[in-house]
Length: 471
Image (cartoon, rainbow, N blue to C red; front, side, top):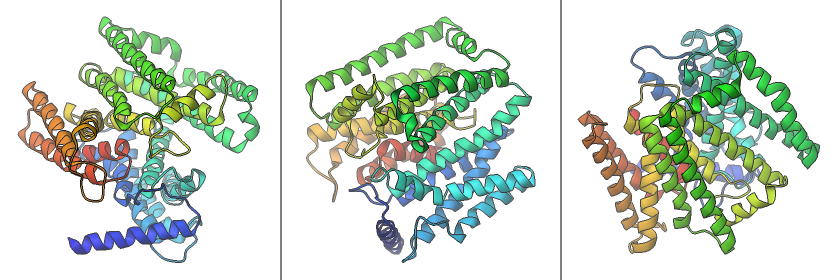
């Protein structure tokens, strides 16, 4: 075990030295987080392996891609560990995951030769070389593990899009979740397109051109495409879906109250003209927990659509903030200054990571997850991390070695998660004692990791919990 730790430390040092030598700015005051990089691919692989009977075309493609992403991690880290390399260049070893992924698409997913090779090259290049380009484009915003996680998540999204949208063009979706998936995929592509257009064409950052672009794309491309794929009016469907029952209307009213509370907290902090503490930021974790637990229990389909819409909204608001587009640009910048996390630099990624961490199980291409797995993000960052922060800041007296986190905070993190798990068990949501034991052990293990890691908790902990509960 000691030898393994020594080798990992040496690998990490070599990689950090190489990327620094090549002018890539790693997020300061953090280690590389190499262990985090493989979790996205691993979660996709485990998801399809746990499917007991039939699985969707998206699940098959995403699971196959997951294998390729794990190989991408190994090849990327192996290449970066070699001294005296030009890190930003595309190296021959990056063809290894491309070849393996192409073969898997051809043999396991039964895709055509051209499709398999094309998708394999996309996965192999973006999953390795693309990670370094992301870190170069946004200096000091990512560790190596975080950049790998973000890029690999984007790859899984792209593969799900190219799998699902052509299929739905020929076979319009019928089920609510399938329709929601199409809506969210097209909407996310819309926001991503706006980001790329603004990045490559600076003239579009002008306020007038910016609004003309987003209105033009929405009116003449996005809505017509959705109408063609869904074979119905997308706006009418969203309204009818959201207000189809009194229960959903009640949930919406409840969510609106939570949203108003969050706006009130933001405005109050801005008016104080002071930096929000870690405990203050955890109020959003509590509100998110209050939103997600009822949604997961009573209407996951509605929460699935709402979480996707919220993700799109957060990305759009971040684009407006970065580009300083009036009238919201200045207000959003004030909020960023008031609530900026020490791990955020150019981009406000922490709230986006929080949403993604809470929504991860919902967004995976499967319908066979138990409630405890669906709540993996809520348990770790909504409850555990929040408890650790509150207790650690107020009553923490004994710190872990080489860290500012306290032993009292870790105990609170474990205690609160175990209490929720036992409550769910008593209510009949956990009827398998093996799952109960695994959940408790996972909560303890991940709480200890939370105490020691300097990666972004909102991103790392939900992924870890999901993988642990699914194994």
